[in-house]
Image 1 (cartoon, rainbow, N blue to C red):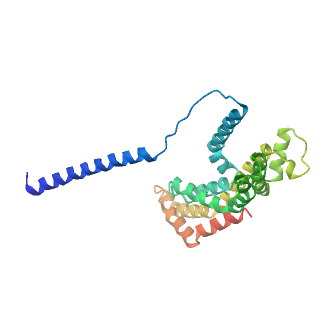
Image 2 (image 1 turned 30 degrees about the vertical axis):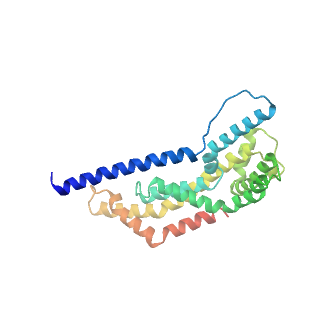
Image 3 (image 1 turned 45 degrees about the vertical axis):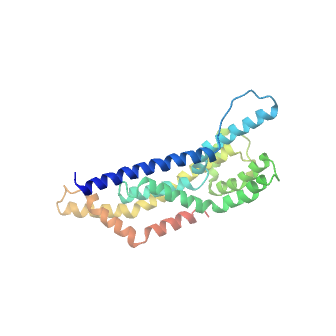
Length: 256
């Protein structure tokens, strides 16, 4: 073994030993500074103990349902469906990828829902943290801005459908509409609006596909897939008209 190779091997082993020493020292430090967390299951001696247990279970349930709440009770549904329609209309298969579409949809959802969440924070969360209101009143105040947002985006026809299926009396005002009726009405209204926007998105790209297919057929190039030729033109059209700017602007304004 040559001298440079011996020195390189020796340096590598020295580095490994130093790393092990650092990890061992860090492990001792972490063991001294991090708190020990333990869970114990015991019989409730008082009614207050059972109440705390039920509150913890309720909190864990809310946390597990948080993704569904974010998706179904906000603008996320419409945005992600429209972006998916756009990718299908252009014909780029997996471009943009699903992670990028979902991430963009989430940030657009945060942008659209920012005024609603500010009201929830000011009217419900902050007073609850400062012990000014109990949990029940905080929950009602937190739901009120979200209900107002959903009511603005929900069609009367969809609302009437779920009122009939729920077999409840006709609500005299919006405050009498239960959440079990409002939420599914809002969801199907969002689906309808998203599909309407998706249909409009398909029209210009469909025209390009028809033109390219007609040209290839007239030239006798029937073995060449039209999508291979039309794809660059559809991407070029989308870029030239500044499609992302127009689409995002239209999506955000559709919630006003």
